[in-house]
Image (cartoon, rainbow over all chains, first blue to last red; front, side, top):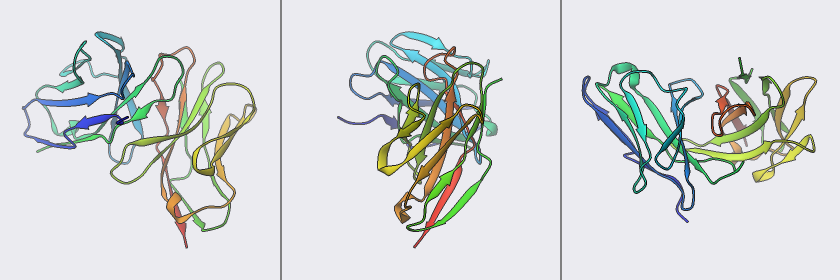
Length: 113
Length: 115
C-alpha cells in the first residue's frame, strides 16, 4: 500500500506563473488535507477536502489559491500568479473516515524566483 | 484562539539518556493532541495521539506522551534515546469543535542525540 504521493517534489516558478501541486492519497482514504510550511515555522492548515467537496478552507488565502479533489484523480492545489512569499513546502495528508491519524506525503517544495 | 507552544527550539541528549520534548497547548474544551516526527526531506510521520482515556499514551518507536490537563501540557518522552531519533518533532492540537484535519502545529523542536 503506497503512502501519500505528492508530485512534483520540487517546483520552480517565476513570479506571475501558475503552480499546480498534486496529491494522491493513500488507497482507501477519502479525506485530504493541505498544509503549508514556511521556513523556520510549523505547518499551517490550509484546506480539508473530501471527494468533490471542500469541507474546510479556513486556512486558504482568499485570493490566488484554490484546491480540488475530483471524483477521479489526485487532489490539486493551485496557486495562480505566484509571488515570492508563496515559496514554501506544501504538504498533503490523507486519512480514512473517523478519527484515524493523518498520513503525510513528502511534500512539494515550491520556489518562486 | 487555539494554539500550541513548543518552548524549546532544540533539545540535545546523549544516546541512552532519557529525553523529553515539551509541548503546551491552549484550546477551548477537551483537546485532541498529536505528536509527529519529520526526518530531513521527508513528510511528517505520526507518532501518537491523545483523544480520551489514559493520560499516558504509548506510540511508535518507543515514544510516549503524558497528557496533563491541569498544566495543559503533552510532553513527549522516551526512556532511552537513540542517535536515529534525531529529527524535528512537532506537537499538534485539534479543537474537537473544528473540522477533522484542521490541526494546529507548534513550530517544532529539533532533537539531536549524540553518540
